[in-house]
Length: 340
Length: 274
Image (tube, rainbow over all chains, first blue to last red; front, side, top):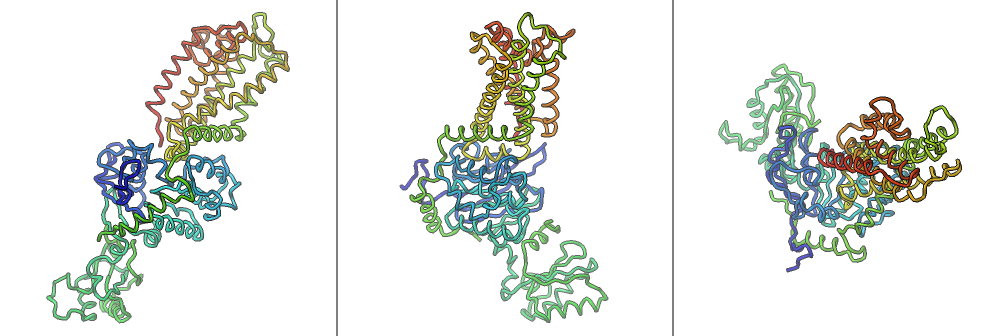
């Protein structure tokens, strides 16, 4: 067996993070309620949800900063609290509030964190990589939000960790910094590092993550590969060109009737029984009153049918948008609420 | 919908990552002593670089020393000793309080609020290393204070009882332990702004009526009996005993030890990292 000094087999590594039935209560209220999560090495796992969903608490339990009330957590096969001494050198953490002392210079802070490791990354290379050079001699107090975030990320990865936890890494960043950060995250992934990031930014999860856990009210309400989540359900099979048409109009429209006219146009399944949803080309729903999600082959003609159908009912849509399904749509469909 | 990436590919990349010999060992902490030394230097620089902290820890004690020795606004019964011999031990006691208590309470409270304590506790430094770095940082600042205050006092004609130096050193260490414990108790339980106010207020109150500069026996009314039981009074008496008479009163040592035990226990129990 090719086991390391710590006794586990390095050829078939434990997942980066394994969370089972995690429960964490504050004042008796469960903010994390039986969460299951697996983050693989060499992959980016996003925990997506609105503020207050329990993302940060979940991640802080994995970092050993909070003790779970119930459930099990394994990071690299080890317990974050009991095995903290062994895990700390192998786990990089970027906190949501940064955790940077305000009185030190940026470069000094990074060198200080690097000094905690036997073989840290080259601080100069990392500084250049994340564009920290321009403010290396500025005190943390005077840095912008994005500059602080980049410094905090540098501190999280300077020890060459096997697992990295990034809590809202792009908050307050300009687009340019964001791409520098995303590039670094992709490089870590290519090196086999397991990355867990929390975010309420759809594009971050969509562009970066291999796997997404959608959380709300302390529970995982959906999970899967990013691709699978965006594809939605089996209606994806209708030619692979499913798009979401969002309509905002008066509430209470006849969803079944609308679906029928759209399906009739598509003509994909002319002989299907009238009420069989599963074979329909279109899915039509009203996640919140007056806000409709139409998922299907959104051709120009389909849009014309939609607006004609609305016109026949004397309904003026205040908004019609066509786009591929986003994680925002996924979230909206699951909860009836917007992420932000 | 399993997303497990190709196991073999990941294992290979991981192996390359961990065994990247050009970069040396990986996933290892630096030696414990190096981490603590680094944190000590870091903490010390932070305090000595911060204007407000410098004001409380260096400028304030030196000003009090000069004011009490060179002017007679405050009527002191020196018991036959020169004013500078009488005042300097108390100023050294105050210096310990300002660094171990006020400065440390405020710094730790803001570190706690800004997440610095949590972040550093996730690095190989850990909570133990962080605490060790803070305590050693306090001692390092105290060395600077003692040097500055001693030089000023000597210039003013101070001639301490040299046989009392070990005793004075012991008193300062015990005082540091008691007041650092109090600092941690405050910093770990109150909001940062609250700590800022309380830590400064307590320093002023103890300086005026806590038996630090003016011996407890010379304080008015019941304060005389209360002050000897306070850590400030015990530290003041111990410093004066050592540097004026060459011996530390055992009672003061007991009081400081008792405060350290009680406050340390409280801080260990109640300190909140979040």
